[in-house]
Length: 531
Figure 1 (spheres, rainbow, N blue to C red):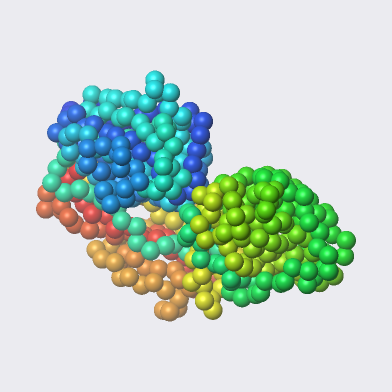
Figure 2: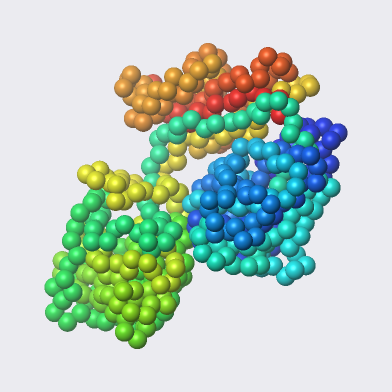
């Protein structure tokens, strides 16, 4: 059964005969969308004493999470007033694709009777939504009415775009349910995880904190080791007379090498005016930074992505220099889009060495950003890449980001429903993904969380593999075969179990070698409740 069907069935069981017309679903025919970190706003009017929101599907792109906020009475006039909003739930979303309902694993929450403002804030993902026409802005069931709405590229900041219709499906039950809300809480992370890409996303220019710094990417094992350090090479120091690239607003140009070279770029470097360099054509010239685009563009790219316009009268230009050892692409005082003075100028440089080493260096940067857009710094090889989540580059210190030749996703455990007591048996259903192609699996249920964050210290498991469930019940073995594994636990209908915590985790042992190659999923703390 599909996840969406499970969610709807679960909601119906929860509400019993009181449950009527859940879910409330708006259009998913999106014709517009926002930036990573953006928000959508609307009002919900609860027409019964209370409802419990138990499931949420949204129209999103990428992998990350969504925060759900409420404010009293209405969102109108409050969209940019962060102080009036209260966080009521958070949920993860994985592999969302625009135009498709993507489940968001929210913690259920209760809404009282009456109208309240609702905001969905995207974290690491971006919203897709629909332009409002008047006729498409209101939706209702017997228990719930929705009035859309607005959207913003930075949640709770600036003037929102209006009218915009949130694309959502809200599953709920009428009434506040029982006395104890059943919940799932993720504990730690699975292992082993390796990524080919990295990034840091800055929602606004004011948040950008890499001015007058540099990072160096050293080739290693088909990937890179990313370190703090490097320097901004003075313009004209590599080639006495730099080549000024003919770039307008949101344009790209391919600059061939004459004396320079870089592994993987025999045709030269493709430079986009908006702060990124690709090793071949095909990545476009979009002005809105997007994590999903970075991770899925067809060509390898290095980015300090922002909405620049070197064609504005008074702006600096983008310059190319080359020598046998190094080639540079420099945004030499280039203004932001909508820039009006040198205060809107930024200085950015990519250095491509014949050895394969890359340096990204920043000089003085526009502190506000006249375009209002954010920055996205990072690297991704061509083709689809896994999302490693953002890295705080300025906090890297003496550490390093290690990028591999291929992505290896961690063993991941997700709860498909909540551990609820109800009449008749109720299975708490769980699913393990990113299962290796070979090995023996075990499913663990425990009464506590040992909180062991590195099993390798005990001679078991890879470094950073965790144990987050005590070994009270061990089920298995099952054969790992590279496909998702499902297991469950039957929750008794016994009031005394309210607020009881049951911990679970999955483990895969490499049967061909030894227990030292054990990998573990994240853990889940399931709190048993009666709604």
